[in-house]
Picture 1 (cartoon, rainbow, N blue to C red):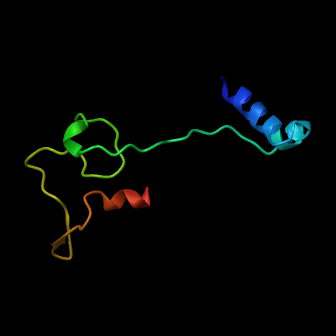
Picture 2: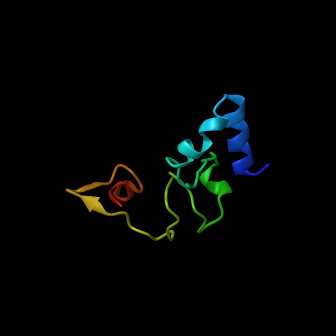
Length: 80
């Protein structure tokens, strides 16, 4: 069943089929991301992930701020 068919069924189930055009005017396409928890070791190097430490070479030196290492592996990403 396509998303459109699911949407139309949902509208019909809730007695809103007669308002489909009006409701559709307020919708827009989107992409849904669903996070799945895996250990870092289970994720191949270079693959996308949410959270955890980035894949870096073993000799990588973490940046320091005011003499202390950053408390989060990828805290800078919050500003992207």
